[in-house]
Length: 462
Ligand SMILES: Nc1nc2c(ncn2[C@@H]2O[C@H](COP(=O)(O)OP(=O)(O)O)[C@@H](O)[C@H]2O)c(=O)[nH]1
Ligand SMILES: [Mg+2]
Image 1 (spheres, rainbow, N blue to C red):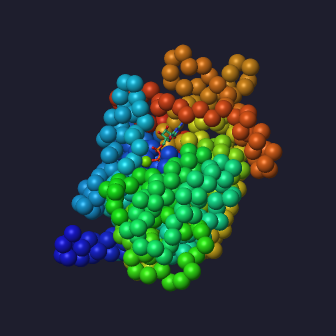
Image 2: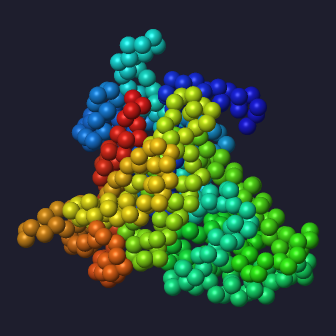
Image 3: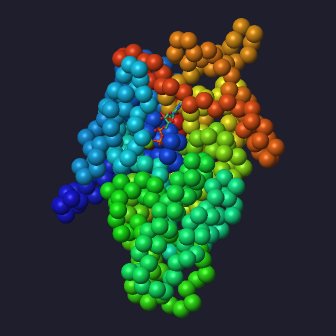
């Protein structure tokens, strides 16, 4: 980006902020949490704004009617350097026959949404038709956890991982890389041990993969699992040093020194850039969590979610924000924790799912409250693949669109979280990944409470 276009971007953003016409939304979630589905659903919702029946389709978005929203759609991109969010591809795959879910995200993308509404303002410059722009970024969830590393030195990172090893051993055993790494000599020259280091990195990566498969949240560094353009780069050559610290100061060119430099380069060149691109200056945050999936992993994964999101949210500033502070020291003034994919349980279980969500993120929520804002919680289905209906015997069950697929009852979600309850849930609950809904070309995407989310995200800005 040239200096001139940077200046004009800053000036434009300044003007939009002062006039309260632009908000940046950070969708925060682990991989497979439901971010891409949510961004697709939000975009499709915007495209419906102004058309017949839209107010009825989003009854909980009360501000829609109050402010007479008359148009919504995709606006031209804010930053030409960032690829656009692949909305068309996502819709094409959802509407194909047979349909498929949008493909997993492999890189950063961005979308700018716009809505227009009637402003009844009486102040000078108020009144008439106004626009509100909403910027959203999508990215692979694997990279999200790296934000934790922003303020961590190599030593901090190492001790954090060392502290987890035993705790997660029941679901993901890290003995293989522990043993391999124990043979490394931190003070010897890198050349003499390059092969051993590569083997330790490969074994550490294999452990991270097994953590991910077990449903653990804290899987860092994320690029070890999904390197993107950094595949094969030197800066991915390090492992946390969990063994006895070097006996003396590691000389330049020693194995320890090299790993620390690679870590620092990773943090500065990869993670900071990712943060700047997707998370700096966000005004509002949605944290999407697939609670049911996390719970299927048992007590370890349940606790891991809490610890992970607490550490993660430390990288964001929360608090009330005026246009002045938005311009000079932006803060997040609204945060929503959303339990995603709630169409996988019957409606009577939603209150239980909500209490599960609250207990899963209690540490992270405390972090947000310390900034003086009260987080909201909701259960959400961005793209519903099942509908809840009553069977003739009065029992609730889930119905999909697929002929021949029988209605089913997945089970009950407990509302207290003792180990016993979790075990009961794991054994008894049938968590089914659902195929996407069967849609005709002109059908709208079915959802649950997307309108509530829209109201909370945007209502006060209209
Ligand atoms: N039943 C149901 N499944 C969903 C929903 N949203 C996402 N999914 C499933 O979760 C998978 C991951 O979603 P995605 O949005 O790609 O997650 P991301 O990795 O956070 O972007 C999808 O492929 C679907 O199988 C939803 O609202 N309902
Ligand atoms: Mg995605």
